[in-house]
Length: 151
Image 1 (tube, rainbow, N blue to C red):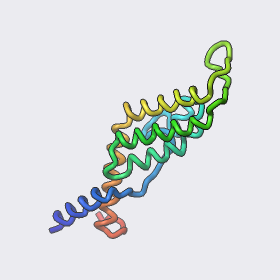
Image 2: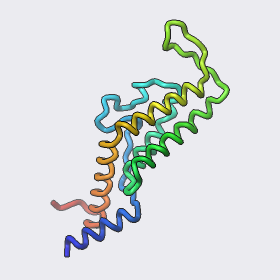
Image 3: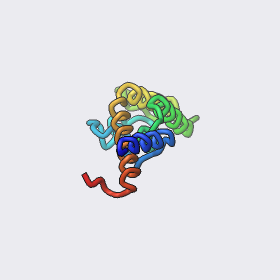
């Protein structure tokens, strides 16, 4: 009977695409050497503005039933939209020996694309861990009615 209840609770949680207590650490995975943020690693145009997008991406990874592909695509759309605020602006690029003025929106978009490619290629473990944690927390809430697991 206990196993049946657990199975039903699991199905309900998954079908309702419940978000367990979503946590975020900004732009970087839990075990990333770039934590507390990939932002400091890349230091790209617009990246400081990506923190909210990174936080949302972390929460999307923790949304039961949301696919990694959908979470990553939403992340890319959000960062691309952030870059639109740089339209028509220039910024000094100090990456070469001779600093030069470059299109700020294009530079930001390159950063957004790098972030997207990074999560798309390297985010599988973070996604799987986040999904498992969300399912476990949701089941504990259902099973123990919000109390602590006595075991």
